[in-house]
Image (cartoon, rainbow, N blue to C red; front, top):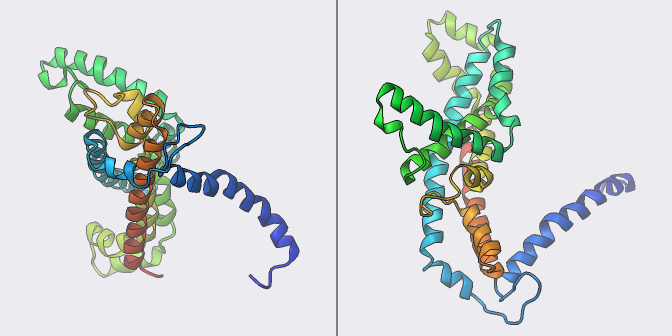
Length: 286
């Protein structure tokens, strides 16, 4: 850093100022307000840890946190399985590879709110019609229970983001030297053995990136949750981000909402950093 000239700092200064203005200062301010009775404009009293102690007895918040954890575990697993599977499919030198890549990536270009309403129509109307047509009672009444609402959110999120994760895996799959795969083939390794012993270890960096992205994204989901279930029925599919928004803007408890956001931030940061640290240790250097 000592060897950087004036030009380096002139280019870097606007980024530092922007980062501080839109990330660091709001974060510190929110952390401070969580200890007060802030109403969105002013505060009169310093309440200490009152909001944080109240969180321990907030059943709705704890329920939304548990729902978000379950959703994130299932979604991260499915997104990486489908993302890697799609990447393996479109890197098989098929004539339709480019077309398939475009088709698989397209859902990522559609906004979460629009996707939520589209899938709400599919789950409610299309599933109901299919259930009546084929006599499958289980297809009727989707999104009317917490269980079907949970799987509805999982399906929507997986369908939307699998193509994006596919792109990350494609980049690493295409960087694997053909000589390694040919050598394994000459040694008698079948396709599964080549994938397990050659391909899989060499795409470990892609797992680190993909798991970090899917983990942080699945914890922060709000618009899909709002459009598809709006937290219902009876708040059974309410995720933490939605719970925080409702606390701050519907109940007008800004300071309490800030306390929830601080706890949620620390929770996600600890999990994400632990995941990156663990995955980096498993990576194979070429």
